[in-house]
Length: 290
Image 1: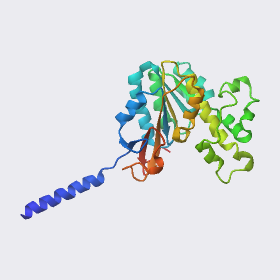
Image 2: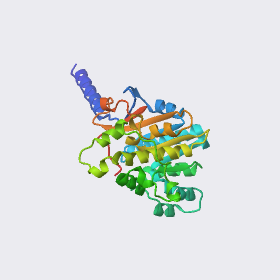
Image 3: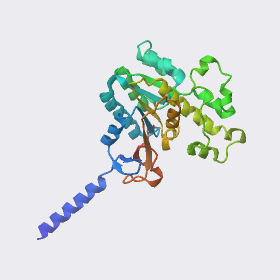
Image 4: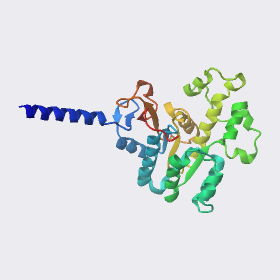
């Protein structure tokens, strides 16, 4: 009897220990907070013309899933897939193109492009995936010097730029709705200098507009585009997605993904409901890439 008791006790303790050791690196949820999985997210992404993958810039799970999803979408769409990212400014497109077609070596590309500090760990795998498979990679963001102009002087500050400079920017003036909740929240932030407060959301909007414009300009009739951006640029169906619908000549099927951090990923926190079509919840204790 004692043997049986201790055997059962050991089994219970062993099982309990295993359960305590099981930790999810991430969980995926639908817009309404229902549990989902990668397969469901991939299926819906494959049906869209444009996928906006909203990341937390230093989150390794987001970057890994961006790579996996891009690889799987390439398996479906083959040469019709286009990749693009906020992390590349439009005036770096020539460097991307020259590196992809073999005109310049990678070391020259890396020396001259305005690459983020986490390029090697987080974005190089995506660039190389595109290059090795003959896929375009589009630099969509506005050059930061021009976003800074908008911050100082509004959209009007861009009108004096040269024709070449304007080729890196969405048509002026861009559509703009200061009542969109995301932009309105920025207007209501405290502590902003009076001369910049009105322009603060405009500087965000010109980035959103630019990314949407260059997605549309590089999306052929039979093409599919996956775009990587900070989640705040596409959360709540605003930002880039809002501009995509302004610029598209016909209805466009856009699919959104957001990434959030939570203390627990057992369920999606209420405040994260509705951020995107699918939301990736990652433990707040997850290690960072920088």
